[in-house]
Length: 334
Ligand code: XXG
Ligand code: FE2
Image (cartoon, rainbow, N blue to C red; front, side, top):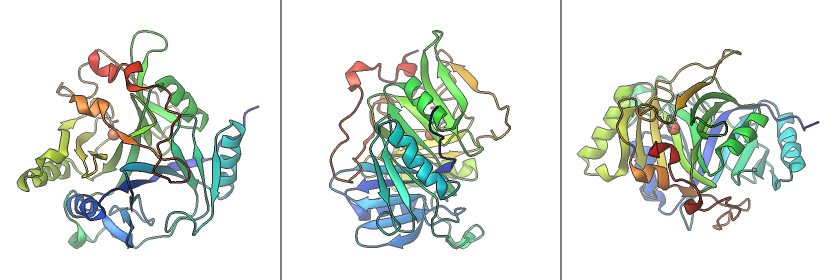
């Protein structure tokens, strides 16, 4: 019998290493409108307007631009122990991180390298934060409301799907070919939206992007206008547009280190117990952009490297395949 999975509530935060904290502050705080909850010489803890927990994004000064970890909140303190046992039993590296030894504001946690090679944290306790929902006077830039999802690059999408299924995630949408095992991409959730995590085909483990939510589509357009007005249009990579998958309105930006972020809004509720997976054909030109606009090649090819569990600027080496061994953006070739 397999070990019970921890009860994951939602994607909670990501911790990124950035090479220039000042430049990153300009991008994420001044332009995107994240609120600063904690700041010291080397770290910024940021959150969106609607978030009542300490942070949803941590920026740490590092030697190279990389992902320290993605982090999921679990329902009870016992679920941290369950996560430790779950990953130990499938033979993955595991490390306990007591409150105070890890990320500011976060309680006891466990960090693992998952079967896809990603550094992933599970925690329950996190400091509360002041309610800013109606502090309209503090809003600026993109007016980010909350973290929505992680998107990760991995060469083996069926393996990623199977792993997250074993962690109790549902699947809202897929991109598929005709063949039985032709799964090009999948969107999987624990909270009642389209996703907490999605997979993009390509060399891995790498972080493809963080999806952050605004309330309305005009904030997506305004974000693009702001970058244009400041002659910073090179930060805009793809969109604005309407996704086929998820129906969300989007624009993808690259931060000063190349980390990709998607400003995302207006997806739908997935919480009914009999919610069915919506399957897109890889040959449907509306799947990635509902208006049929082509996806720029850099979006399929470029991504953020990940670090090992000690947080050293050392790439995780167990990448499953190199880029040449997969059809890069295979679903984009349809
Ligand atoms: O969040 C997303 C995405 O994963 O970033 C990409 C929703 C849809 C898409 S896609 O490009 O497939 O429409
Ligand atoms: Fe996304």
